[in-house]
Length: 139
Ligand code: TYD
Image (cartoon, rainbow, N blue to C red; front, side, top):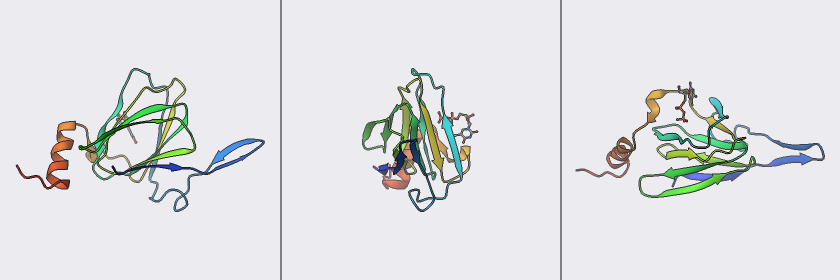
């Protein structure tokens, strides 16, 4: 699956901790947009889409949430609960976020500005695109 968990270097001293996200240092794409989710209810699922082209790095800067990640062939679950851990999501990964802790702040760095046409919001459409464009399945 085209995902990676990367360790983000923490600069810490007796005053506290600091993590820097910097182009060509630990972020290997052009950062065009940053957004963050907070005050998310713990009984909701967010995401539930894939992106045709977008690449993202996701960091739980505070609290935690679970990710369900799916490439149409395998599905994995992971917990993001560490501000020193970045989840790198390539394009065409189906993602769902759930079980947000009350204090969760989920920050996302993206390599494109917001573009609704880049979203695939139906899982059936996602599988059809994967079959047609990535698995070369003709039926
Ligand atoms: P939405 O795509 O539903 O969030 P998610 O699928 O990750 O749970 O986005 C919620 C709203 O915010 C929707 O009206 C679109 C808007 N939005 C922006 O304006 N800019 C952005 O960068 C993002 C991610 C969303």
